[in-house]
Each structure stands twice: as structure tokens, then as C-alpha cells.
Length: 303
Image 1 (tube, rainbow, N blue to C red):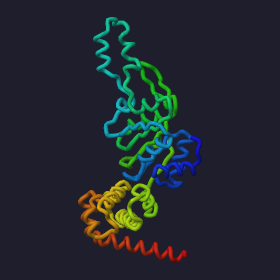
Image 2: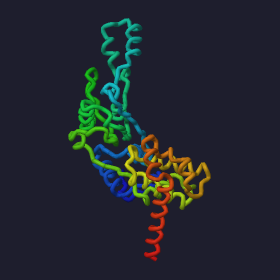
Image 3: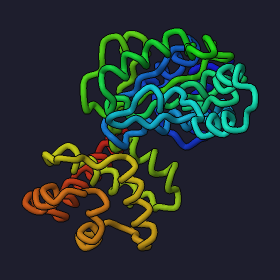
Image 4: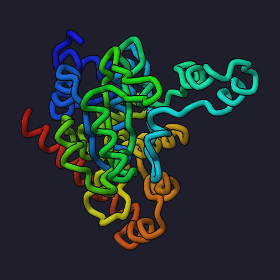
């Protein structure tokens, strides 16, 4: 990777990922220092998308390990192809060499970790939602990521041909160990400001009108900051809302339109009840209009 932070920012923008130096510098350093990048933040703020964007920028394969409760090293690292081994045993006439033959790379099923290490070129390894696994798996994982090698007892040690770009994500369901954090470059992504989210919407849904885009960003900001929601709307849900408004040929936000489409943002009955209790669409649009007026006045003052 021979580009600068500013060039990296431009490449991210070309992929319609709107980011600032707070995000780009940790990403850049992880690439240059060849260290894993640990990204935390609420679901839907763009953590996983960073790995996808990096794979496109670097023109390389994205290998994904989706974590879940009960994930063990066999499913993450490798397994033996028992069915193929059994067929070989049944067909073999020379029993003396069977064990050597069936425990060779030909019978090894590569799972994401081993696959990423075995590739002849640098790949992006995404370890998604690491916080869903248990502490034992996490301990196993950071040992693999420290040395970028895997020991298969029947074969020996397999060293990485090229150190992969490693991106780990966490939604904060549990605290991660200091051992894992120590091995990674840390990046926390917050919900964007309305101004930044407006940029994101323009990049992802450019057909939406400027006024409606601003109203949409301010409306989502109101939900996140002014209501004690169980689940705050994510950026991906903001974009779903934008696409829905575009589909409905909306030109400007109205109470009726908000009432019809609010379920794209609020997906918990208690959150919907709270939204209506606090004034619903009318309160949201009042906040949006107030912010729009302040922005307009601020612009006037500058001129």
C-alpha cells in the first residue's frame, strides 16, 4: 500500500464511504503497520463496510468469519474432510500408508482463518462481531493473529504467505480482553453528525432532493439524541428510509409521510410508543424546522 492518508480518504469517497481523519488515520496505520484493526460501535454505523471497502480498494478477496455464540476453532480454522477420508480408506489396498495419505492438505477443509493465511496474495480477513464469541475463542484468536501461523498436528506449521489485512468488529455485547485490544489498533465509530449523515445520504442516494436529505438527517438525529430509545436508528436504516422516500416520490417531509414510514427507523414497539408519546411526527418536524432555521440564520450571518 503506497498511498497517503489523504489518498486513502479519496479512495474511500470513490467507494461512497464518507469518513474523516478520526476514522481514516487508524485504518491507515493498521494497513501500514500490518496490525489488526478492532472497530467498535453500535450496529449499522459502518464497521463491516470498512472491510468491504478495503477489499475493493486493495482489489483483493474479502474472507469473512461471522462470529456467533458457540463458535469454536474447528469451524474458524480447519476441519478434516471425514467423508473424503472414509472413501479413501474404503478404496485403498495399502493400509500401511493410509494414515499419511488421509492427513494431508488434500483432505484439509480450510475455514476462514486458515484460508486467509494460506492465500498467495494479501487478502482482507473480516472477523465480524467478535463480541458474540466466548473468552476461550478470543484467546485462541489473538494467538493466531499475533504470529499469523497455524499449527496442524498431522501436517506441521503453516505460515502466512502474505499477512492479511485483519478487521475485527464488535457491537459491545461483552467486554473484550486486554490481550486482544493490545494486539490491535482501536477505532470506535459513533453515529455521524447531521452534516456528515447528509453527505452519506447524498453519496448513497443522490437522487433524493437536497431539502429532503437535510430533513431526513435532522429527523434521524432527533430520534437518536432526544429520545431514550432502546435501539437507535443505524446509518443503514437511515439509507433505507431515504430509499423509501425516494420510492414514494416524496419532495418534502410531512407528518403523514413520517407516520407512514417511521417503522423503517423504529423497530421496537416500546420505541414506537415513546416516539408517539413525545409528540410523534409533529415533534420531529418541529425539531427539524428549528434546526433548518438555525442553519439558515448561521449562513446569513456568515454572508
